[in-house]
Length: 462
Image 1 (spheres, rainbow, N blue to C red):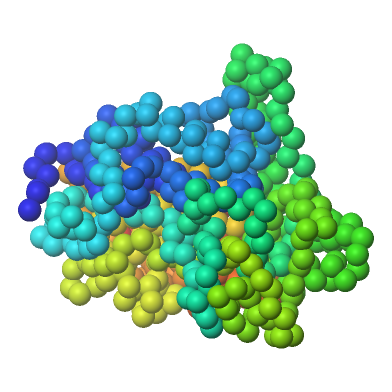
Image 2 (image 1 turned 90 degrees about the vertical axis):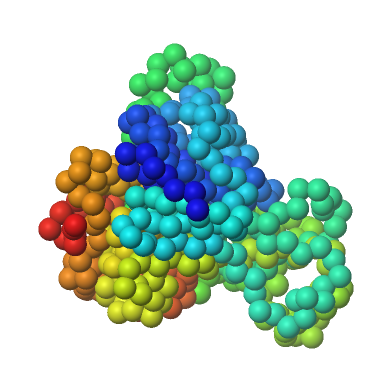
């Protein structure tokens, strides 16, 4: 067993995507380097390393989707592509020399709290001890492969959107994409000119102002999902008007979702409907009955012959990316989350009762539907840093949310979704088999306030 013997608290960070990197960098900026960053893949990046399909981009404006202390003045356009975002994170990782702390191609298979420390075991058979455990694997990392008869029999190329084959040449191929209709927000994505980039490079304040503007826009959009007011009606009208721009009535109705706008995550694009109206595109709404070696057969009996099938079927939410996380007294994350009382599963989206010195960045019930994930992670990291300071000062050895605090949080959740868009009848991953959506039913500003500083009396402390 490799045991960290340093006097300062040691931290295990699982996942080197956006949030895990942020945790590591803020530790470095605070002069705390007694941590290890575990990553199952070859390099950092998370979502943007995994999702490389053509056209992948972020639906958060570029100037908001970056670390506030590491602004980028030369974003190419309003909503940046995945490759540009990945390059940004790689540049930041290099600046802070994260390779020094990174254990790449190392999957954490078990984390068990024993004798006051987290014993972290990897697929390499190595076990190390840590004072704190930070799960930064994100809510969406376990791909969903649909259960369709014959899916194993397809003779062509089949890929999930998060498992793209960069070497496959799909030019001229017959490609089928399996997905469900979603509402489309017709938001332009203009390129920034060299002059605009120069201004933001010369006057960083302009970049900061741009970020704050888009943060404000995001706050307004987030509030539309919470209350049935003018914001929600405006979004619905905007999306309906966009759908009505499709000239062919039959195609228009094929693309009409069966839920209200924002009940599921929407697409931000001003070119999506144009693409689907091209002569070489066919939209099929008949149910899939089976997949055969040469293509997809639908309920109307037709065989759609294909060379490639793309599964845009999403992810299992809140699976944490770690097979086994276990606290003292037989408490496990699996038992608390999947088998425990729903209303006491977590505390403020960042902690779990019964698991000491354990923190989740972008955890269950965080505002993933109405706040930038970078902001959610930033708020969470600052919260963890305050807890670390208490441990480092010797005031606290271990801390875990009280069951009563988690229950109070859960009860407040269960009574706060009534007017939100997410309970208007759609079936989405936000529910994850739960009776309430796994998101935040209040304004983003309430999340900032709630996690501004720990309420120490809500924790079992030794």
